[in-house]
Length: 453
Ligand SMILES: Nc1ncnc2c1ncn2[C@@H]1O[C@H](COP(=O)(O)OP(=O)(O)O)[C@@H](O)[C@H]1O
Ligand SMILES: O=P(O)(O)O[C@H]1O[C@H](CO)[C@@H](O[C@H]2O[C@H](CO)[C@@H](O)[C@H](O)[C@H]2O)[C@H](O)[C@H]1O
Image (cartoon, rainbow, N blue to C red; front, side, top):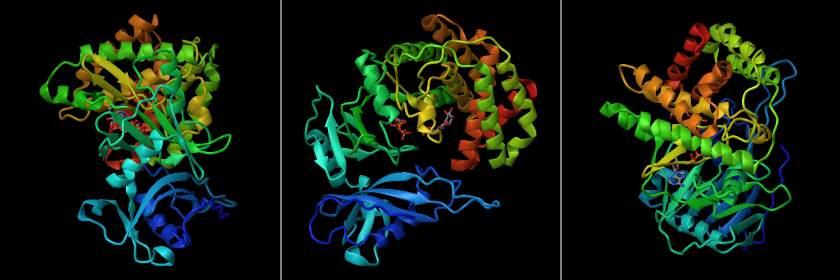
């Protein structure tokens, strides 16, 4: 694999030979929760850039390479670029034990413990300091919003959440999302939150500071936002309600309203207009279904039944106009503080290409995502609570209708197609990341394929 090492000016020999680090990372990276290439073994890993943020703390961008697919003339699937913050120490205290990556064997790091420095309060504090003082460090650029006020000395803690990225909370005042898989261009989580803040939309925490790589298509590396300290995410609240046997329809109704508010703000912030061609959307959904069935054999018997949902979409009237959407809306992406819902994480479905995630789409896509999430929650209890999910789904749609001016329940074919497409995505997601959870979306697949809804 061609190797472009962009090294900033630095002290003698500190980041010299990276081969020993590459060998350690090749083993460690695929085991991380946020590693996106779980379906492809890592054959190769190369450091693209290494920036010394302070002695013993390296910021790395690494590129993975994969073996060719085992087919005649098979080409390697594309690799990905990941962001890492590495600590290098002679001694590792027990509290950093779970952050250990390994021990470097050669080069200037020989004998040093190498660890994920996001777990290290010293490195985490340094990142915030860099964000407080905009400027560059080698290939990295740190920037702040015009009115940003970020105090110094806020105590950091790494969030212990099931995440696609890694997040640091500072003094319960700010949260910094450090993107793990990075792509050229502005990350939608910065682009969208910034545009919504400019619209005056209060349902989304506004970006306060961020960092990126230099260059015209610099990749966003991290975003700092206000932390909502007293908030609980929708998934936790839904499971709590289920465990207590409580009704969740009031919350679901308000969540429907909040979703519509965000959709209206998105439509204003990103004017796109026009309706997507249902036939084109249906073809894309069918192609995704076929690709997913190639990867997950359990899906195959249901393919003909599921196709009927996409066929029905192709033949139905246009729904609401396409617009910028959230793209991966579920109960874990909404936070409730007091009586208000907030929406976070506008990255879209992480496995989709960036261009696709930023393209205008039907708002029904997000509605379907949340409806699926009520089903996921209800299936966490035994016996399964379909009535609970059904009531939440009704309440969510009713709440959405009060704000949006149209009722998702009256768009049956559109909703069924998007729910099917979302369930197919979830099957692929669970097969790759959490095989134990596969029965949850598979139950929906069966329902949608056999009973049609
Ligand atoms: N502004 C915020 N205030 C409070 N908690 C937050 C905030 N933003 C994110 N979180 C918490 O961090 C978790 C991960 O954030 P998220 O943006 O979904 O990361 P990822 O893209 O890595 O999945 C969320 O589930 C939520 O609990
Ligand atoms: O990491 P993200 O939050 O961006 O989203 C990915 O992971 C989610 C799981 O953490 C996954 O969501 C699925 O599981 C949820 C319960 O854990 C459930 O509420 C969602 O409805 C279901 O889709 C999401 O699909 C994936 O993109």
